[in-house]
Image 1: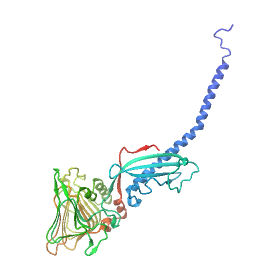
Image 2: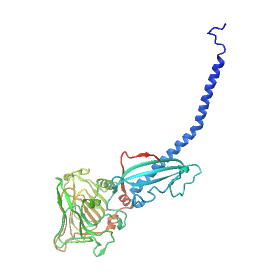
Image 3: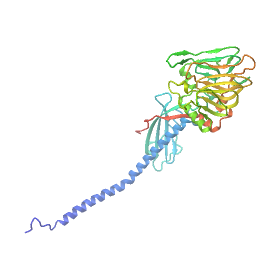
Image 4: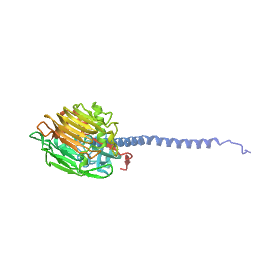
Length: 416
């Protein structure tokens, strides 16, 4: 009799069970090994499609940053309307630049595609058909195109200069003596070819720190004259705003001047005499920081110019006083106000803009009543664009670029 402890004959069933388990595991691993390359290939193609979509986003940001080079004149401009394939290696992408929630906002939507083996995508005018697609990813991003670095410049062609004319003032203006502001001529008796030919443009009102508004006016005295089409005009805040510099544009101009070695930070708000040089010159606030809101008058710089014969762009984060025989070809910007009383044979050939950010003190263009006075501003939009020929091609390229900022938290992958 065999006792219950007798284990003879159990080895065969255990072996068969073990063999069955091992066979099942082997078949499972074989199945995994056969599908793993497919899974890996699909993952790789998906990542390639995502990379292509991100390449499309980068292309769109470049296009918005360089509107002249890219030809982007509206969100619907091809190839930025989502209807044209851009091939890249074995894949392609489309990019659509759509309007955003704000006037300067844009929504970028990029599709990245990887084609199936044997599918030729080069030269195709539109999106890939579904049977041709091995992988497809879609990325969306919001950006703000904050306007050109220079706001008023552009390439050296008159129609791309965004200024209304010879003298643009965000406050009151006084023109007296035998001064001349001429929006129609680039020099005495020589008509310009500018798209706009305004003489004087002012902002109609100024908001004071106590939140009261004052009306701005143009006062002509003596034998002073203002010429242009129109000779004088007033614009409201909204219409005037595109001609002024924002904080982002000023920061960009400051950085460019620092790179050029033509950046100056004064040690105090006391007036100092500037030795004018050619090219882009940026005179900063006293502490090198933005003025803030409301602006602090004690941080404004104060520049005096008593003689010069130069060309370029002069940007002053404060006020400018010009006395004497001064000739300047290009663009002069005073973040606050300007007092110009020229003598001799000088003049400003280009354009002048004042921001009047602190007070309602008038910008003044004055000269002596006799023939020795010579405060003259002629509008030359080409000299504005190229700084009277003193801006290098690379610097001009930097000035025409638009500042594009990615809105934080808006990058996301969306369903295809």
